[in-house]
Image 1 (cartoon, rainbow, N blue to C red):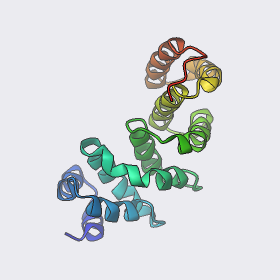
Image 2 (cartoon, rainbow, N blue to C red):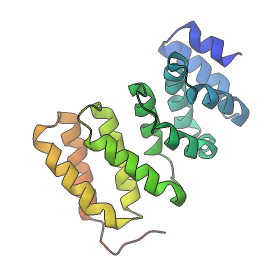
Image 3 (cartoon, rainbow, N blue to C red):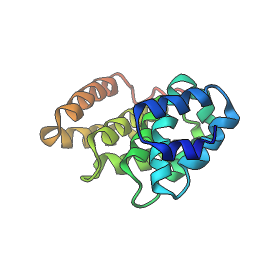
Length: 179
């Protein structure tokens, strides 16, 4: 299967599942998908984002070698919401290496405080940050303040995730570093 051609064929759940099933647990096929996802062709990258999300649910270890590129990709200007949403969704489910904690936290804090980001991107960023705070408790108060600031004006989805995150933050002691 030529993944690029298949992505261009149509943007549908059926096509996404077909490509995801073809990729399966094969790292070399996933690597080809990641090249398409991380390239500058918006239409291809946007469509690849959905497939990357689906494959990584079933085979999260395929993502590991691409984490640094995925985090760097989030810094691009005018990145399509689908790319941001799927990237941050994946980041909340994988173990982020210590070498990427700082960069990932900076990006997720920026996404979380932005007035222009969709709720899903903000909620996934909140969870990524919570996962990092478990290792870097010094970030706990900053995350707590940002969530509490936005709660009164936020959507129901943000409020729900915010309450769960605040509750989880309360359980994290300032001295509990899990390294």
